[in-house]
Picture 1 (tube, rainbow over the protein chains, first blue to last red):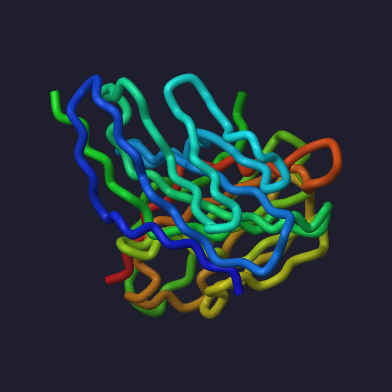
Picture 2 (spheres, helix red, strand yellow; picture 1 turned 45 degrees about the horizontal axis):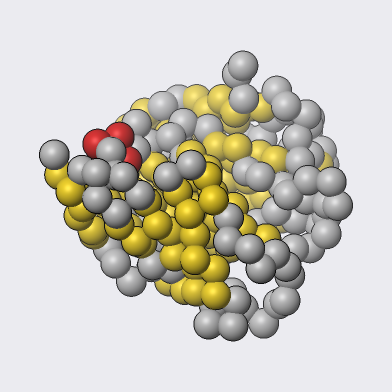
Length: 117
Length: 116
């Protein structure tokens, strides 16, 4: 069974600095998707970034980028120029590429990010 | 843009009571699912559906019941609530993943349930 591990329950970063959140996963599949979701205090789940396993290039969305190491099964999230609004719980998630069967996401336990002014 | 709508947002139940969490989406998504979120455990899949009339169990289905009579609605039923079911519940929907889309999940705002 696939598993997702986030080993950092809490992280802290100074405003305008850079922080990296770690995520590792275990799978025997070769085709899959990886996601980072943000959950602010409002509880809403917001998709931050997505990575397709078949793509070697790391995904980037504005200040958010990932370091995807397929062989090491590692998928870290880097937040540059941190802002107060980045304070949230961040979840790493995995989905097997069934090619149309189901869309089940497997989540990690989350990393609570605090941003210090 | 309604997206995924969950009701109620908050609910307090007594042990043994039953209730239904409602979920509706207006995006014509085939796939719908229910997760529960507990501290230190992330989100865990309860039940899911790939279309009207089709449901299946996720990781933690015990104590919960679902049905999918329409594409839009996917209610989650607690038949006899227990304190262990105190949690935040999320409904999520998406198009089925395929060649032309990645099956991105869209989440509702969550429902906080407390069972005394």
